[in-house]
Length: 187
Ligand SMILES: O=CN(O)C[C@@H](CC1CCCC1)C(=O)N1NCCC[C@H]1C(=O)Nc1ccccn1
Ligand code: NI
Image (cartoon, rainbow, N blue to C red; front, side, top):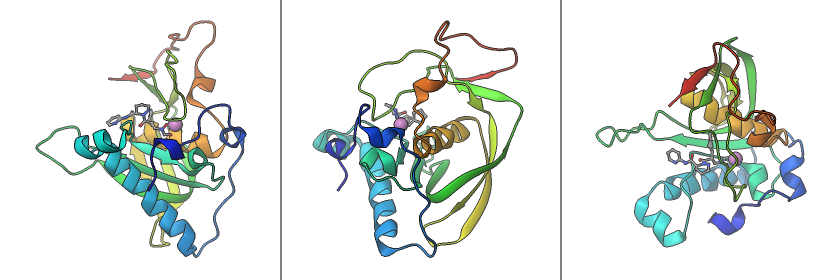
């Protein structure tokens, strides 16, 4: 089971590596890893389990954060309203690839954090507002989806991990809250 002890922290060189594509058809090992990554996200968002296991709530996780330099990510974005338990996006993605993106940029009004970064790094992390994404799903089927706003931000944060990029690499050093015209701030 993945716990906070399994997650490597900044300073570990694996977080700065470019991860390798996984072979398709997927190996049992890679399928199992994806399941464990998704289980971590579920546990981390369950108040009882998160408390029990001492987990920080997470909406995404990338294999390099487990010191595994493979192009595998898991995302589980809750809908946000307690009435509707359905997540807005829940998937394990193998070899995810951004095929195209909007001209429109976006960032989270609260900035970003990372389970591999044990400190606050303030500032806007400007990303694409909309992306068209291809990936292989846990059943080994090639998928092509379009995402926007928060879900698009989450997936871009995870794909960054596959390329050795940390969220604070995007923050403007001179003025962390500098924003070009037209960047959508997502609250
Ligand atoms: O690479 C993956 N990571 O580093 C886990 C990150 C991924 C998100 C950061 C910004 C976009 C993707 C993560 O989830 N967080 N960052 C650190 C602490 C908070 C936590 C978070 O945003 N939690 C959350 C949010 C809404 C609902 C439930 N939980
Ligand atoms: Ni992260």
